[in-house]
Length: 364
Ligand code: IPM
Ligand code: MG
Image (tube, rainbow, N blue to C red; front, side, top):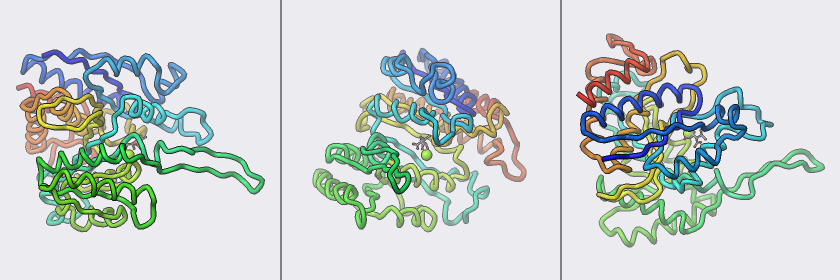
């Protein structure tokens, strides 16, 4: 089969990890007889420098004409001035919005071979396997008013957490659909004891739940969820939550897996159901790590696992996705580690070497 993939490496280590994701995609193409036509574009800081905007109209067009988007990372100290008119992150947020990518899937899986290398007790994290569904185009990130202004008594600023019932309904539905194929339980994370938008969220979740009588719905407050992630992460299976809550909780949860460099994500424009291919953007959950950039150090596994998600959700290539996931397992079992997951007695490799090893196993 033929697929068009837009590749936006972005900034910092984004360039290096995206290259390894592409390497693995090509290896899969060669082995299984698929053609992935790649088109490259700029986003983030590099786009500000070269095109004067964090996301150009051409890049948006290119993404819209593709079957999926692979993204590295955006941002860096060069563009971090709080007074700046345009920020690299604006490009990413605009792209998510323009492409209608409302459902951000972030699986949190603890690899058995990395259990001893984390800060947490092995008995707490062994076997952890859950997935966050983060609402990605609404909530506190996008709500209006959102501004800064001067008053006679000093400066003020506001962000707003806004949700319509339609936005809540479609994201909660993603949660129920995924729960069907997993443990038949959905945890909806909110702050309904304080926030009005969370009370609507909770109410809509209960309404949608009526259509899924086989799935148990549990409500969990976001602060309590933050605690659960550390205290008893095995309790968690499928969770659905607001944009900002999901941003924060998934960074926290990544520490169960040992490193941000292990967590992949899929941002989808529809509800994933069996056999339906959905347009999506695939990116690691980590940032551009400017201090590690250009050193062939970064862990490409999060990006490579994001490629596996692309194969599964946007192309319906389940066998191929599994091949990539198995290759990652095998390379870790063989003892290869990037610096962030390095442990005693293991073999330290760089970004490219890790990519080569996984590409070889995926396509071999
Ligand atoms: C993420 C990142 C982004 C976000 C940034 C880079 C805008 O932290 O994907 O989690 O906040 O959504
Ligand atoms: Mg984040």
